Image 1: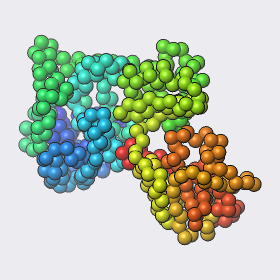
Image 2 (image 1 turned 60 degrees about the horizontal axis):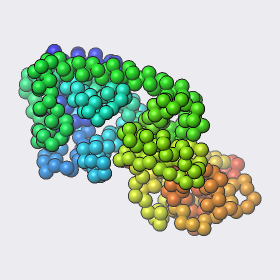
Image 3 (image 1 turned 90 degrees about the vertical axis):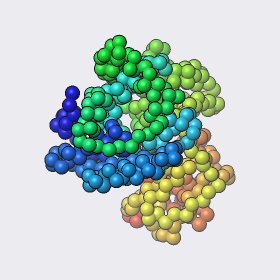
Image 4 (image 1 turned 90 degrees about the horizontal axis):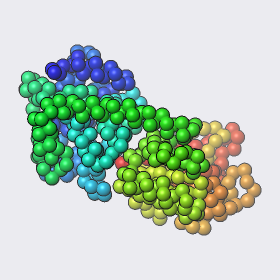
Length: 444
């Protein structure tokens, strides 16, 4: 096959419309080919805004040189390029941690109407199928990489997924493209490299269409995974809010052989988490539903956790380190990010709602529960211990110490998004400041 801008445009037409295309640009050959094809489309007036993002993981001595080369290539084509330095945690393996950090950076930069494009091709897809097959994956895992999927406020697409590696190499040679080489791509200790350099050539020698057939297997499994998702939606019932717990009653009424499918769907589609492996999933199904409601048992894996609380299962990403003793001054003029607590506080003006503007004109303090706090919720006649109120509202125990408390002159004025405290609530018709709590995505 022969790559061309027209061929790429046809693949983009099968994806959601985009007001801006953002290319994940490592500076390697594949992403250089993709960026050049898109640049040609833009020059022909067939593409809206085009930009690139280079993620600097800081894991290789030449990482600074790669970032500089990526920025230089973008300058030559007049494409805006952002170099994003990320911090890679070591939990769960270095490659997996680097991927989590990279995708967190991508999510943060995608707005509504943005499409992030990656340069994965057919052989990448074939390798992914084999890797997941060897790890015992089911239909969702063997579906490998979709042509596109939602990501953050936008979406992620792979327009080169039907192209083979030889076509990319031919295009790069024909257009005299230059790129950087990551020596890690030839490290035989990495599973994918072993497949790429040892296993796939032997398969291709015996079965020349091996990569194409493995990619076809992924397409078949994508169809099967969609059917499983349809079944899970039937079992789940009305669509829950993002991050909502899974009621145990829903799990119990689901036939046993469909429960694992339901939990995988809930984790991925409702909670935005990659499901755990079979061992951890078996623990979720075996240990949590029958635990005492007040025990708050948990199952954790590198990418997330599931906890039982009262009559439901809750899930989330690994919790960041948090200092409950911190006190943060805030003038309410702009959003306040609390990374350790996992929240962004967003203020907006509203009449007759939120905190009275006169009460917070001098600014507030954002603190966290230390014990002994009391509050008179607006509309109630008495003060109550915050501990009792949190129990009454059903706030899960692991969230209580991370719940932002807004104080005015040392007095509690607002408890998270749960209540305003007297005498700080805006009266009807009075100018007020509503403080909304927005959960941070992983890596924010």
